[in-house]
Image 1 (cartoon, rainbow, N blue to C red):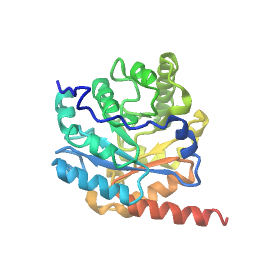
Image 2 (image 1 turned 90 degrees about the horizontal axis):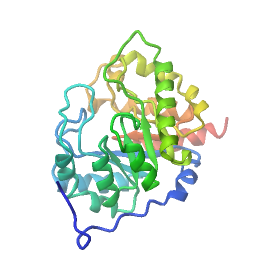
Image 3 (image 1 turned 120 degrees about the horizontal axis):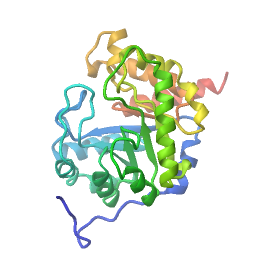
Length: 285
């Protein structure tokens, strides 16, 4: 297992917990930039696997206006990804995590493994992004509570089922996750909910979730939407992942209008610009 001695470990970045709710209250959503250090992510797998390439991309994301950099070292794509060990996940992260955190932008760790999240929080990450919403790995909720760090709780399923009420399924999942969080002692002020566009859903269900996103405001928690380059866009306008910028921005603007406080994107500059312009226009309504 990868370990870093106290003498050589980079200083963990300040989590700046007290600013989390304040930052989420600005007029337009926070923009979370995606950095995948994986060979098999659906859109950019292999592009940033080399540490030098990953750091260059992180600097680009920062310069383009990202508010958070979301680093993932294991692909969670619903189809075609290969599970990896915690050791391999940390091996991919070790050369870059501290350097990315040193850029001065909050870093979230996109991992479902408590041991990886704990290691990342010790090495510069300040936010946990759990694609299984505290429900897959025992110990995740306890870890988050102990570290008092912000956490993204994402809805997921082992497989899509076109016959279910997807809105009801997401709401029930969130309720279970929030009960787990409460029992573990996680403060609600550090929780964001992600309905998981493209995860455990048919393409039609992903569209439905986006269309009815404001229904999740009943939970009283910030919503995160990650529609960037997702497959549902191609069902509307046939395209490859790197040809879905327009669809991604459209989905994120609709999500922002419906109350999303964070959007997760591969295309930071274009998304930041679109959100700022849309917000300026909405303010004149």
